[in-house]
Image 1 (cartoon, rainbow, N blue to C red):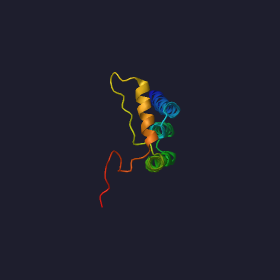
Image 2: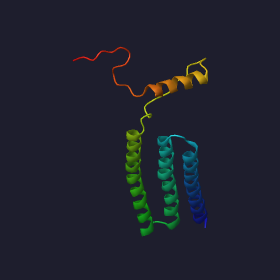
Image 3: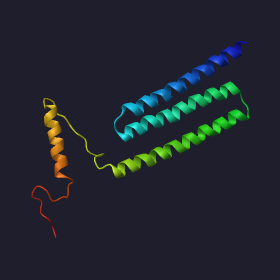
Image 4: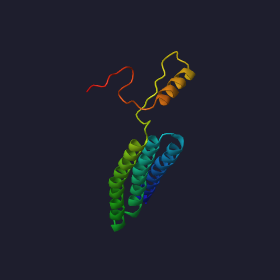
Length: 138
């Protein structure tokens, strides 16, 4: 009788932790503006949420063939999720030209000045290597 109560609270705790990570992933995907940050939030919810939920289901079912199948699903998720996340991040890095730019706001500088400097940089376009009086060497 005591073992059943311990198992019940362990299952409930694991399922609640898994649902917490899944909810955090949903809010993270909604909150972040950049695709790579959204992808990171979704990947963390995918791996940790699935892990804790399936561990809870494994404890609930006991050590049976169902638990083995759930363990294999966990392994599949943990192998497929990083690969798909890496592919999505490579696609974003290859298609987003502004990914490498970092805007720096110095102390005492107003936000309007920082935004105007960023817009001037965008207006100039990509660097060709011949700006600012650089000569082409033959």
